[in-house]
Length: 120
Image (cartoon, rainbow, N blue to C red):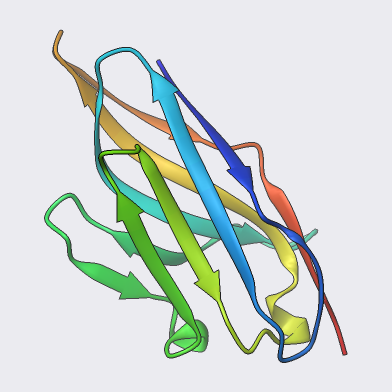
């Protein structure tokens, strides 16, 4: 199994920036696609950004030009740089990763979530 731990959430004023980090740990695995999701209470979880195993990047339309997803496979980490934050970006943010190990088996893991609050 692979465990994911996020960090970097917090309170920021509208227009400010935050950088979320997600670190993966486990035995002998390789990350494939990695994503960031967010969820507001009472609403469905939505995908904010993704990097596929082949390096294709996609963004939720409302964050294009403001958020940047990146990854460092050597460190088994991936990131979400969030600039020009808006009150509507406030949510719990989750990292998600698809992985494979030498067995081989594949799996999907989620982080525990980190709160992002944006004050207007």
